Amino acid sequence: MHSKQADRYKWIALSNATLAVLLATLDGSITIIAMPDIFRGIHLDPLVPSNSFYLLWMILGYLVVTSVLIVSLGRLGDMVGRVRIYNLGFVIYTVASLLLAIDWLDGRSGATYLIVFRLLQGVGGACLLANAAAIITDAFPAHQRGMALGINNIVGVSGTFIGLVLGGILAPIDWRLVFLISVPVGIFGTVWAYMQLRELNTTGRARIDWAGNITFALGLILIMVAVTYGIRPYGDSAIGWGSPRVLALLSAAVVCLVGFVVVEKRSKDPMFNLALFRIRAFTFGTLSTFLSSVARGGLMFMLIIWLQGIWLPQHGYSFTETPLWAGIYMLPLTVGLLVAGPVSGYLSDRYGARPFATAGMLLSAVGFGLLMLLPTDFSYLAFGAILLLIGIAMGLFASPNRAAVMNSLPRAARGAGGAMNQTFQNSAQVMSIGIFFTLMIVGLAATLPHTMAAGLQAHGVPASTATDVGALPPVSILFAAFLGYNPVQHLLGPHVLAGLSAHDQAALTGNSFFPTLISGPFRDGLHTAFTFAIVACLIAAAASLMRGGHTIQEEEDAAEVAPTPRRLRTAELEEQHAG
Image 1: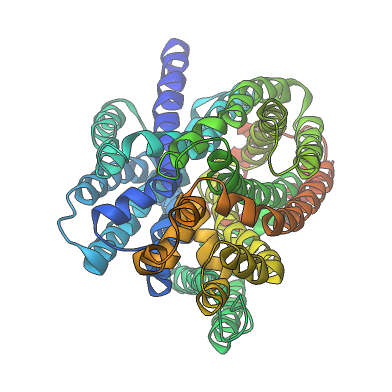
Image 2: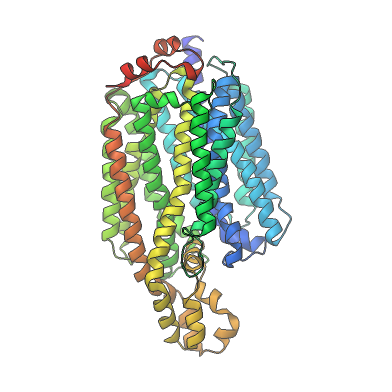
């Protein structure tokens, strides 16, 4: 390819891949804020305990599929062509988005329909995410990859938070717009990709590792299913992690994943190229990716609950308005990411990833600590400033870290290696939901039942009814806050409220009773969750520090490595990346 053509092509590849990553990550979060409108649209109550399965899988299903398939699709891209798999992803994603928007069913049938096509949409998203970074890395010279991958990665991370705002704007108009908006953009991206993108990597013939694919997929799916049951009550316990079902699921997951490692070590064409973990920069960069994603995923959910369930109602916003405004008030986080990401990516091309990525995780830990110092009813100026700091810190980390991981990989392994890194990131987001929800539920379970019962009785609710409501699973209260519902009005029902005085009815269903009631127990759970996030950030900083110096797998080095990732030479990799 001539230099002018190469220069033009690299910007086309970056623009198209960034659009794809934005769509794929945006759809991972856009339904979170839109969930109340979606459930109202299909006439299903998300707060009924038996419906929590549909709620969780509407949120988690997309992430589960991308986590399960992304490595296989990245490996397949190395084998048959990255652009081919990437383009197919655009088609699948766009068709699934259209089908989601035309759900004509109601109730649980309608929810099942949405979950099935969310899973299909996740297949398309996985095709895009698995190959986007490799396509960019192929198109850009080594000295510009940090900047290019920084832009791509930061737009992807920002898509998670942009989705919150977009869902809050579109869902109140019509919940179908949440899915329909992706269709014209997807069609444009599909046509553009098929017309402009070209294969730059040399594909290698290899067999599909079916045993590895099956054991890996089963292991991850079993973990994700265990999470959905682990945060639900079991018997007298507020959480279900000790239930026989969850223990059996986790045990089976461990067996599958151990079997996966055994299979990969013996496979001639492994799906998960374990030899790549001999590259120091790849190993510690991927570990940092996982830990930072755990902290970031939990942060998003904690902030949504904090804003929608407590702060916004206390400041005069109706519960139906809180989903949109929660997304808007979290925008400083996105601004920080967008400002710091490209700059840190550009600087990492010159000075290496380690100082920026390490500093980013340390600053993130400081940001979480500052959030812990805020009162539940905070001043927004302080809150927004801390979010901006955390956004800048995560931008400092994300771009250099992603560029360092991709630069450490030989050309023949970029699809599989980039997808492996993305799998750890996506899996961490799902796991963080389980971890943070569990920590919050445990915190709420300690004090919420008594606080709820006493608060209701103080406003005339009969003692037996107040006790029954107070004994409801904390996860129901948590979901109510998470979805922007007024749970007191919902849980008491019209018959109980009708028996109370007008003053007590107004107090119980107003904007201040539930936020004030939950703020104390919530603060205890919040501190526990943020403490965990601080620990995750500090370990990520230590892992980032251990990645070694500024290393780039140059094209001539890649040419020396056999096309099949299995045949990466251990001695060369360790020598090249030990420093």
